[in-house]
Amino acid sequence: MNALDWEPTEQDIEWTRGYVAELEDDATWTAGEMVYQKTGDTQLTLIQRTERAAEAHERVAKVLDAIEWGCIVSDDLRIIPTDPQEQIEQAQETAQEWVCPDEKCETRLVNCDLEAVEWRNMGLQPAMMPDGTETEAER
Image (cartoon, rainbow, N blue to C red; front, side):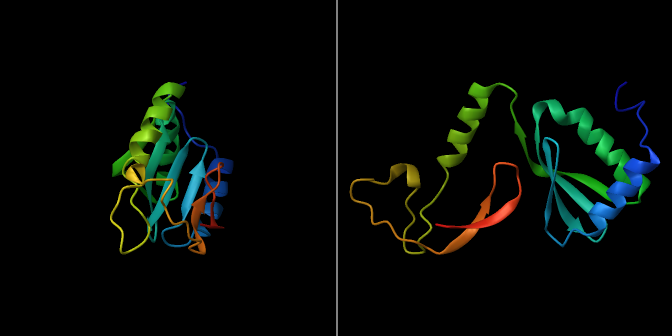
């Protein structure tokens, strides 16, 4: 059955209603291989998904519609490739854009001389766990 023919059950609707009602503004929700962010009182924005999760997103959108929540797709949607080699290449491209966290430094991390770098602990910083949950970690 494809997403167009699929209809949510009452259990799908009630569980989702209860879950999203507890989300704080700007909080993220990882649903399977998709990450949504709460971007309004009753709106979620898809910010990341895997290549193969397109149909699953359509199902989530149907459930959200049933509880009168909006669901939009971010202009900057990150689609994670299915191919592991492409995933690695995508992660490397992203990492090449990382800039030194020191306000006085504008060097991209990829260009840092690791032999001469001064390492400093910047305290607790936002971090993401492998399962997609947000946390803080010493950096």
